[in-house]
Image (tube, rainbow, N blue to C red):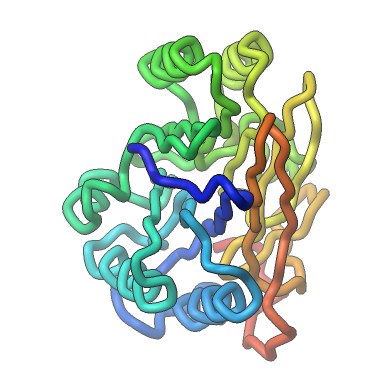
Amino acid sequence: MILPINAERPTRILHITDCHLGAKSGETLLGLNVEASFVDVLEHALVREETPDLILVTGDIAGHASAEAYERFSYHVEKAFPNVPYVCVPGNHDTPSLMASAFPESALPRSVELGDWLIVLLDSTIPNCEHGNLCDAELDFLQQALADNRDKHIIVCMHHQPMAVGCDWIDQYQVASADRFKALVAEAGNVEVVLWGHIHQVFESVIDGVQYMASPSTCIQFKPNSVDFALDRKMPGYRWFELAGEGQFGTRVERISERNYPIDYSSNGY
């Protein structure tokens, strides 16, 4: 997939993740109306940001996969940002076949070319499993994409974290083939960013010159550095990217204004 860019300004990307939408409007997760918080995040981005060139979604669009959840996701995104393309990878709560039937083909590419930038989209899910893995086919695809695009600056996206983030309870679900993945990324030399969802919190680290990062969920937030499941009181949000020439980019996290969401902060899981 190749998208036109405006060479006179940075390319703008809105990153959202882990919406956990239900089959019906008004469904909740630990007391939070996930559709309401998703709409709040989109409205915040609509008011605060310039129109993005691309909306990038790193999985768990649905809390329990259904065509209705995916159709409502598309409705809200297209209402807030008409004519802005969006691309998605599946999360462990998603079903790729349902995504393929509910979304336009353009929403599920393997890569997106934006001038001298390339976004590579990987599927880290294992059917009916919470933990993630990049199978040999996915890693072979990544290796070939990197070899074929040595003149590009690369962003690699997936759902699961490819490294420990400091939360024992969720780090057990990280990508099982992370060592091979990180070796491919380091060897390529032109990967600028590795981006994922799943952990419902902000994370940033630099390994071999590559920025590894995750973004807040559009619904509940997990408390960083927790041994056991714990919720954070930070608000839902998104990450904003501006991609410039020569591999330069800016990124920041934005959260919606304080809301009195009826979240069950005492919960020990979901």
